[in-house]
Image (cartoon, rainbow, N blue to C red; front, side, top):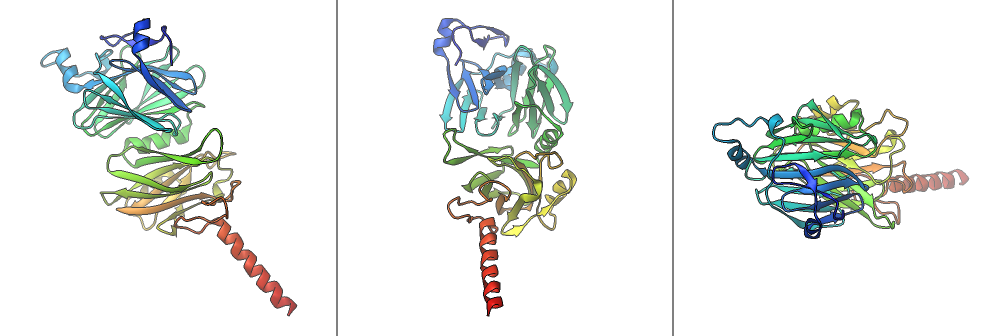
Length: 379
């Protein structure tokens, strides 16, 4: 939480010093990764691990913005450098997320368990969002509905429009977005920098191919693992039934038949891409050699496919992209057999209740076969 010298957007969308009275009216959220405050008309001081990335995020209905511009005026996003912002209130909070409801009908969900991602949904009415960056940040349009934000300390982030809408760098060097009805604006931060694999994932999200992201994390005190689900599309749901440092079992449901990609981030870093196994409805998914193969699998391919992000690097990241070939309801198990807990869903006995066989089961079976062969040899 900031004190009396924090920042808050004024009614014309600029940023000004808050007074002590403003500070007393502020409320906010502080999780393990994400923290922010809410004022009367904007979210302010959006920070990851204590470092502020965004000074303010304001949202209002598109009709309100048009009304302010005057009858017949076109909505040129690059020229929209300030909006009044609708009223808002802090909603439900969990250990891994917090929601903010805007009077304009939009809703933002900040995901503490997924590197600080937030999603602003327009819901039933088109919206306009105005984002003021932190002092040393700069923004650049990358096309395909994306704007990349860079900071001097190496932290990056990307704004992505999913569905109808657009996002751009405005004339003041900040970010403005139009979010179409039932569309969404996604902010994906990268505290340690952004690479080519992140860009590929963003492209899949922007075009609607990547529908959800599941992150397994462990409490700072150790012990229990928890999962956070980010829904990028509005027609796909993910329910996690089991998780550990190296395994996540989930049910993915979609109303449409066409396949989609689900991104799974495990709690422990993947040491070797070859150790990862993925099962869809109990059958082993094939490995994809490229993102193109992964996308092809989602277009009613013969089988589902998966790939590990950064698999070519010396040490792969913890992200596994699963291209599910068709829907409606599929069970998915992602397992890393090279991690310290043996890739098991149940850490007590090395077995998993997921769709595919656990690595502990395979080891036990080999032990039984070895004992039988030794007994036969002695006879």
